[in-house]
Image 1 (cartoon, rainbow, N blue to C red):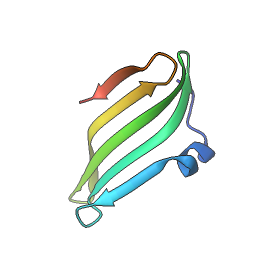
Image 2 (cartoon, rainbow, N blue to C red):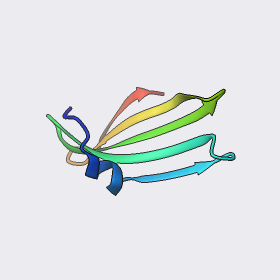
Image 3 (cartoon, one colour):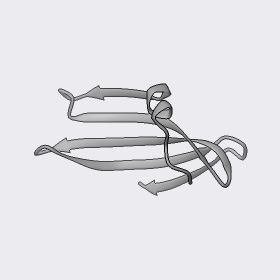
Image 4 (cartoon, rainbow, N blue to C red):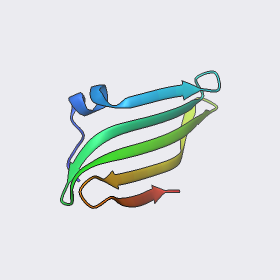
Length: 69
């Protein structure tokens, strides 16, 4: 996977809930399998973000890779 550029973050989607302690983020990524989206769900616990889910959705093949589930 290639590094995420600054525009990918700006073009992505994000939402916060639970008094801004839960974040759901989706950003575009490019890698050896083509273009994809990375979905992230995290919770802020005692000023530290803990990742609950990280998933890569590859556009071309409709394949999903669970990084953290």
